[in-house]
Every structure is written in structure tokens, then in C-alpha cells.
Length: 437
Ligand SMILES: [Fe+2]
Ligand SMILES: [Fe+2]
Image 1: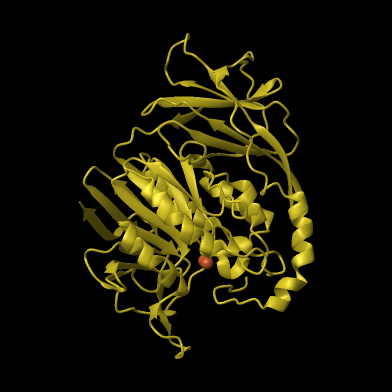
Image 2: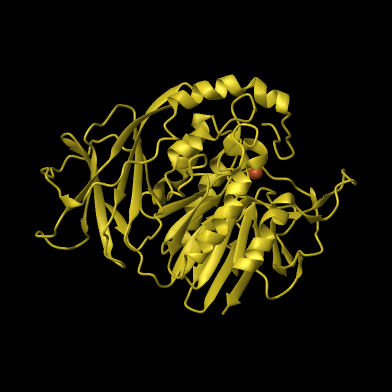
């Protein structure tokens, strides 16, 4: 497996692969905006007991407001015309009302593979309610699966750093153990580089297989990483598979639909940024500029008490032993976003990409300052590890034991506190930090 961490791609190489990217785009469905949701109605179909529907990698995706809405996606080998998601209050008795929402049926072609992607929006949910949902297409259906609308209060989230792997066994064990230890987790996120190669469909299958025990039960908040932009020749392309496979809330962007977005959970406003402009600018310019204009408007529109930013590439620059020319400081991503985080009153910033866990405490105006956001570099959750690579930064407050193994995190949000804990694969805690206000 190639180490892509310091990969740079020349403009000439970008241009050389443009033709291939355009061809692939023509077959992808990622750039198609979703149809407006149909009005909710009582399910018209007879609910048989059939559970034979082909529903691969069933997943919930976060909506803007997870008290009242949710997105459900799945894949199938054959088209499923007129598929729908039906849902009802769990344990509501035999007269419980059943609601229905139609699912899109889009053919998605990538890496020589055809799949059909199905996406449905569940809306008008009652906050804080335990529901169950089922997929139906033709005479076939699935079992009922739990789905809970959140109540706007306290919650716990599971946070996974880079899961990209040459063998996804470690990721699978880590993800499943994390959920087993945290069955009360309300959603999960993975902070970019979900897979090592964004075009390789077997890696996406492995990623989905790892999260299968919980992806249908709690929503996923995707974050894009640079590896999502690599094709099988290790050239950069637009992140077609990622964009097709996950339908997060919209951002009103023409060019970067699904690249960045925000959502609310509890009393927290999450802003999911995209740090891949090094990869995308030659193919489609403007990703950073668009986000710099979007972020203040998005933050200002939120009345939530807390603001958390999530982005793939880290804000600091670390020294490396074999590269003395590389100085300690702030990365271009930090220089781009940290002044905005200061201005907008962001409480915590979660990043990834360097495959190491580092808690840097609070930083404001590029200096240690308790008034600034808490900056956590979330670690590594796959089997691509860089033992001994990074030289400690002056702003590091807590580092995972070296040489590093995998880790995962939880975030617990309460009325007056945000608590972040970092765990090794065996569940032992290596960091525990709380912000109060
Ligand atoms: Fe990575
Ligand atoms: Fe990365």
C-alpha cells in the first residue's frame, strides 16, 4: 500500500487524468441534487412479513435537525423501482400509524462495478421518540430496524479517526468494540480517509461491513479526507464514490454539494469542513474560498450553545526527524480556518490525517489561550500507522502512548459540558478532557 500522506500531484499529472475523471463523472450520480422530499403519508402498501429485500449496507445519515429528520440509504445489485421506507413508533401497538417516504433509485457506476443506490428522507419525526423503520420494494421488504429521533438534550457520539487500511480487520474490531462498549451512542463520525483508495470498491465494502452492526441504527456524520480523492492509479480525481455513498445535509453549493455541511445534535452545532482543496482545486477551483464565505453565515444562523468543527487535515504542522526543513508551526489549513474559529466562538475542533492522537488544549490567535477552541487531533483507527514519525509540538498537551496503536473517541454533550475521551482498542482511557460553559 502506498504512503499517500505527503503526496503532491503536479498540474501536468492532474491534466493528464482529467479525461478519465470526466468519463467517470458521467456515470456517477454524486452531482445530482436530491429530489425534494415527498409529503409524508400513510403507507399504502400491505406490510407482509417478507424480509428478502436486497438491502446492502443499510445506513442512517445525519440530517440538519436530527430531532425531526433523518436520511436512510442502502444499496442493491438490481434496480428497486418504487422502493420506500416505512416507519412507525416502536412498541406503539397494532393501531400505530405507519408513515412512508419514497426512495430514490440511482444507478451508480465506479471501479467497474454497478450498484443501485437508494436514498430516502424521513421527516416530521417527533423529537425524542423511539421509532422503527423498514424498507419495502415490490413484494419484498426487510426487518424492522430501530431509529431514534433525538430530543435536543444530552447525547454521546462515537468519533473515529482515519480508518484507511490495507486490511480492514483492525478497523472492524475497533469500530464494533467501540459500539459494544457504547450502546448508548447517538451517532458516529469518521474524520476522513475512511478508505485508503477512494475508487477501490472492495475497500468501501470493507468499511461498510465494519460498521454494519450500528450504521442502520444510529446516523453517520461523514467527513471527507484526501484518500477519498485517489483513483486506483493513485492519481487525484473528484471524490466520486464518497459523494455518491453518503448524502449528508445540503449546503446550497453548486460546485461542492456534499463536500461540506453542518448539522445539529443536542445543543451542539457541528460544522463539517473540507480540507481537500489541494486535491480538488485543479479539477474544480474554489473549495476553500466557498467555505470561508459559508462558515460565518452558517455559524451565525445557529442558536445552539456549542459549536464543534470537524475537518480532516490538521491545523498544526509537526516536525519530522528526516525532514529538518519542515518547521513546527501551523498548517495552511490551520492558517485558513483558525482565525474564523476564534471569531465564531467555536468550542472544539476535531481533526485527523496525521494518524496520531494529540490533545493540544485551547489555542487562540495562534497561541495557547484558554479562551480559544480546544483542538484535538483524533488519532488513527485503521492499520496505517506512522510509529515515531512526528516530533512533539510545543502545543501538545497529551499524546497517545508510543508507538501508537489504534484509538477511538467519545464525545459526551451535556447542558453545561462537552467531554471528550480517547480510548485504546481494549477500552482503556488515555485522555479525558471536559470543556464547561
Ligand atoms: Fe489518513
Ligand atoms: Fe489524510
